Length: 274
Image 1 (cartoon, rainbow, N blue to C red):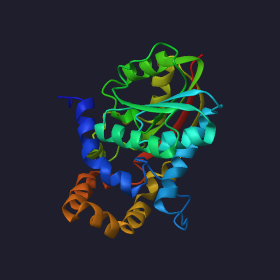
Image 2: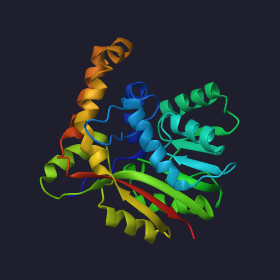
Image 3: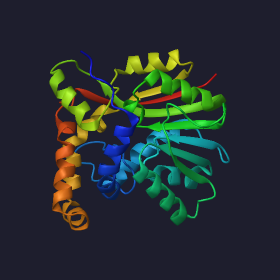
């Protein structure tokens, strides 16, 4: 019997619970990190910013364009896009906490006139066809209860020749599946595909693939380095949120560390609507 998909409302509830500590720990960016090797001394926040830059650079953004940040988190990536590229950004997330923090960041950044955020499900977007020049899906499609439906929606809201950039985990080994199952349960994931299957699904939705990269060894492969970096902030995070909340946060993510380094990859794909 197959397991029912995790509903968008449940994903939102989980992020409402977990995002405050993650927001503080990673300075507003609830996505993965990128370290070149074990001797790379970049602090955690910079390692996380690297992923944001690496993925968004594949979009080739131009000043004045309109970007959909599908699964926008607490808004720091959208602020970076507006500040760096001079674009307008509309962010959508299923988390009420993230919407609130993103709007607060927009106000404090002085970019509130080009940033907007709303609660919503990317499987049913409230935008007309062809509304956006580009779509960013930074570690969000793995939560899709119906991936093909979500890809169809992203395709719909892009203008002709519009671009999509995504990053997500990829499945790299079928050995010891129980480790992967713990990983997916811990993160409430619905989707974990090998890179060729990601490409196939995107092409089936109508996208033309222009670039793809596998950087798992520098992302999930650096999970031990992440633990060391996170522990450097343990005292300040505990003082801010309390020991009980920090312990609960750690326990909720234990399954994330279950897979071997070679089981989970991290892919970046750039595609275009013809």
